[in-house]
Length: 335
Ligand code: CTP
Ligand code: MG
Image (tube, rainbow, N blue to C red; front, top):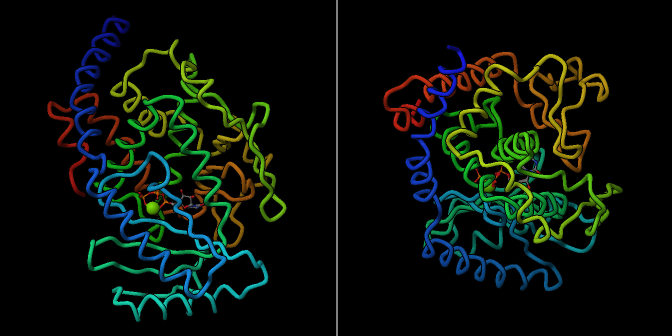
């Protein structure tokens, strides 16, 4: 009987497939929006090259891989060849230049973990953050984008999870919940773990791409066009995967002893990373290893209070998908 019930439950979940795909479709930014971004980038490049003719402006974050929902902010990195520059000075100068060109809400946040200038372009309504020489972010953006090209289900799952997290208010690092970047890594890890696997572990394969950034070697197999049928033996649908994803984080993940690691394509022990206790502000209550900066736990922002909020939201999502008569509304209900 339990087997029968399980099968019944599965077929209930499968009914969510079409509505989930429709939600994903509706979240993809329109061509018009991408065109506005281009226009805005051209303007910025022009302004910046006057002051720093050698510098390059890179797009990173969701606008530069496949994880962008419509109306996202854009993340930019100003790469100034010189590594001895004083970032704060550059940021203040940059803020000055942008301010005098009628851009709005220009703010230099020089003390943040990643110092940035924030601004808004009144002509297009686009907001953006600009950081300096953060090449690592450009490279990890590329890794996530390459994973997305292997199997369409990653983008679908990440869209559902990001949309859920934004709707439920659990995508706010300053409130102790997780960044979009962390959620996408959770999705990649989850798809690496399916049986049969839907995604490979690109950093576990013979590297075809390699750069060294601040003494960190970032290497992985990037000829993903050779992996397009990697996940084809697994026929799981987006509805089933989203349900299993929430179930995993609600009921099956071992929060006490384990770290999820896209780098190894596996789970590793907290002990091996020495992430077993609180050090300073890092509590390691949910551990997500950064694929390149391996000493960085993306769960470090999560505290005693917000871990409860997060886990309750995972449970809520899993239960709604299983039991609610109208899950597509309930799941994304504003908190
Ligand atoms: N990033 C990082 N380390 C973090 C957070 C972010 O390196 N702890 C970098 C990653 O390169 C990531 C980018 O910053 O791709 C943007 O992060 P985030 O805004 O969290 O992700 P987006 O994909 O841009 O999501 P959103 O659409 O919500 O802005
Ligand atoms: Mg972003």
